[in-house]
Picture 1 (cartoon, rainbow, N blue to C red):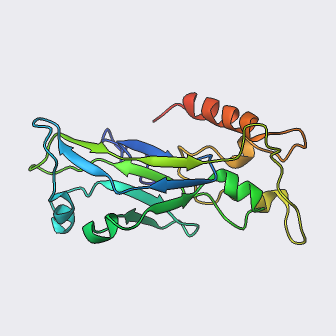
Picture 2 (tube, helix red, strand yellow; picture 1 turned 45 degrees about the vertical axis):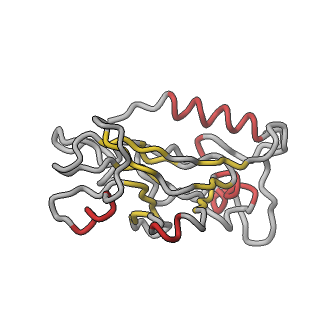
Length: 189
């Protein structure tokens, strides 16, 4: 992709947490908190930098099935009331491709006011038991390519096809192991 790797020696867009899909079924998220890396004090005005042309707006970004990239954020009022959720690859498989995993990345804030920012986030990954059979339920109009939908994946996201093929003896645990090994062995640009 055009926003997921080094370009002419410049730093990566996805410099805090590279583009990836969660292999779980569903990921629950609360709004992240940001801290000054020097003083360890919470930064409460970081989202106000969004309109500043000198800033790179950090935070969580997602890619859609149409290859559009969006920054995801809850406003302060909503953040105390709501959780965010994103779809993982397990839901993509077990829904026969009706749901598609959400490629996402976390980008560092870059602004002269905050040169040393840290981010604290809390995510809960929901998945089946490790010995759960891991085959897609087929019905009319569904085939392996439909379930393995991977158009517009960033370069750093391994295709589902490379880690899952609907084998009758597959389990979620085996899939999780293959997935973690694949990400661990990736060579980042």
